[in-house]
Length: 311
Image 1 (cartoon, one colour):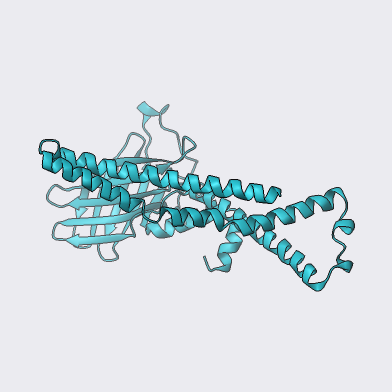
Image 2 (cartoon, helix red, strand yellow; image 1 turned 120 degrees about the vertical axis):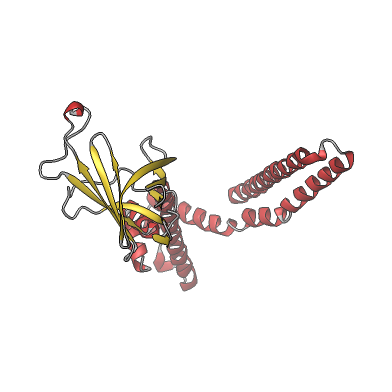
């Protein structure tokens, strides 16, 4: 009886919730289209205003199409699974409170009933495992919330070069403990021979406040040299100098951050570890960086599952 009551409550609340969500999104969309239509002249012309209202009603009708089919699907589809979960949990509670031999005396069960119990147990275990993997994926999605937009590429034109990719630290000879400040980022660099400068636009996802948020940066570099094979551009800071080399033959970009001794800013500039006066960087494929960061953020069980599928 309780199962029927809970099923009715689930079905009713799900249908109502799905309809409300679709109605809200359809109303917001149609109202935004209506407002834009009025701003384009419909507020001054009565005939256009009528057309805007008709368009609003039409858009609302289109957005609400199939709402009942979706609502009924989400309401009724989980019911058999919820009954199986409930049956298994009730038996599990009875086993704990009364004793497994009293509740589940398999010696007295027929093969069909025994198979049913095994199926319910296996199905419930796999379902909880699946839900665990779903929540792990949500956690990883929070840690690495976006794909990094650009694959590494370098485009060469007469007196004009563009490069796209994601910066990663590559400290073969530098500080082995160093890490890039914002590993989740993507950059586009444009170098012009006529102005002898390079401009980098960078999008960054930061987790410094706990939740991920998006930052943008615009960095200017001066060109030190430009020939048929390489472009060298640099930027001087208070505590360091960054020098980057774009190889036109291999279409790669490597950078070196050299720490400098600034006596007037010694309290501001933190001295790097002894023997490591520089860090090296390379512009990589953003998709590869995203895959590596996702793997690092994944719990061990998710790594095992991914490895089974070759990821």
